[in-house]
Amino acid sequence: MHTSPADRHDTASDTAADSAAPTWTIGDITVHRIDEATLPASTGPWLLPGATPDLVLEQPWLRPDFADPDGILRIHSHTFAFETGGLKVLVDTGIGNHKTRTNPAWNDLDTDYLTRLTAAGFPPASVDLVVLTHLHTDHVGWNTRTDGNGDWIPTFPNARYLTSRTEREFWAAQDMDEPRRQMFRDSVHPVEDAELLDLVDVPTDGAAIAPGLRLLPTPGHTPGHTAVQLTGRGGAALITGDCIHHPVQLAHPAISSCVDIDPAQSEASRRRLLGSIAGTETLVLGTHFPAPTAGRVVADGAAYRLLPAPPSGPARPSRAS
Image (cartoon, rainbow, N blue to C red; front, side):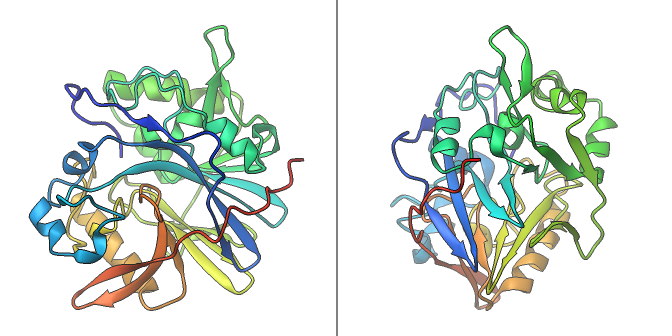
């Protein structure tokens, strides 16, 4: 997701700071959902205009968790944190605080995201690896924070930040509008200036980036978009990024978001991904899925549906070293 029409007047709402992070167990790995904000009700109809209320209401399994009684989609903003191979990993970094954005829902937020991340056992200085599925505004915001003097500095100073080479090179070649240039100035360039950003070549069969961690190419939303495959002892999970914005796209894979750069390619990536995991025990973790956020994909006629997998906890916080 990137931005919405500038005339929207509704805003995101913060999640209660004292709520413990929901967790799922993937073999020997505990995945924490770190909440940032619940996006306003207008987000769903704008983001996925093909998901009309009538179409949503045809899928009873989407309610009440993923849509309201009127068939309006629920959309959420969160990230995922876990440990694998001795590394503390964060996948995507949300919208961020105190950043000037044309989307009112994202503009100048003041959430307790870092408090929640720290409470889950991942204080910023302890994070080893930040994986960016793509370089859109609501996925890179906490790459940086203000230093209090008007400058943006890396939020995770001891981490390597990582994204696909295709993704970074695509944006480097674009004549970007001012809002996107601003996002790169405050959320990407400071990480590059600190020499913390690594670019990864992602072939068609994916790229291993850490023990039990792999990037899978899912182009379409952006040319270098990747999903993140996580494998623990006896378990597997897939973090969608924006290849799948919402579970309605399981029932209707042809529905692409209004900000997909190549909707046909996005649909092809989505169908390929869903076909590869349908009927397996792979846990799907949706980057914008509202609670319960996770589930397993099963075939449903010519398409799919999600069998929700509620969190197994909050778990004991990860080590805070």
